[in-house]
Image (cartoon, rainbow, N blue to C red):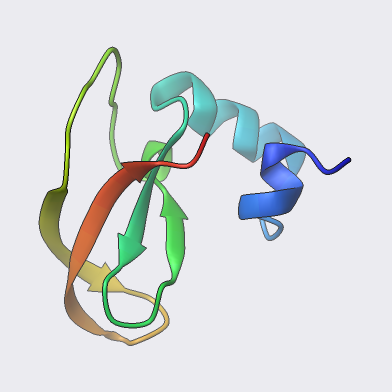
Length: 75
């Protein structure tokens, strides 16, 4: 069975993934246009947070444009 890192963020090594998880456990950005995912811990801290359908403007690496990014849990 694959771990969450292998399943959702295969491009991250184990050490980087653990660092991001400490900052924002289980949260991700997801591009509403192309579906690209990025771990929230890479960009900020999200401890004890709760949100439903939160969206923010941000840069999508795959689209290479400013897009609406959905903040949601991947676990």
